[in-house]
Length: 140
Image (tube, rainbow, N blue to C red; front, side, top):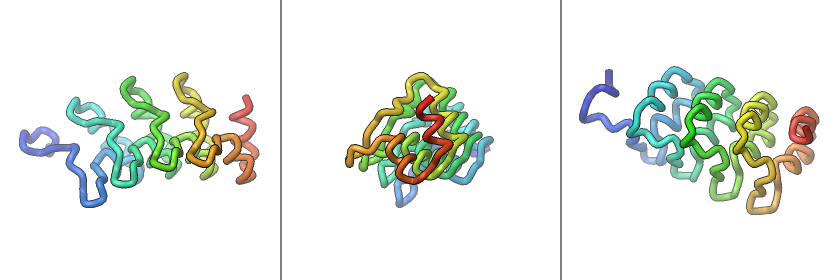
């Protein structure tokens, strides 16, 4: 109902720069994410105050269903990095989110070789963290 109100801006951020579209995936609210992404006035790549996108937050939290939803939109950049150069893929590899890594790699425009500011790529990060399954997936 709130989204139907003309005076409600679904892209309004809180004091930390977090929009409803950033918070909903981090909390695993797939239905809310779908509703927000149906709106033309919601930018799916809007970063929070830390420079992290909703997809980045969902990947970090390991929210598989919520990672799939924004990836269905062509205007979502799955390679958008935070200020440290970490992408959703590199963060999923770091956190051991095997299913999220698979989902991200299922999209043809995800670059598995994007390096962060220290030159570390997802494969390096997964190997360093001992994430054997993720290393296998990345090597495939």
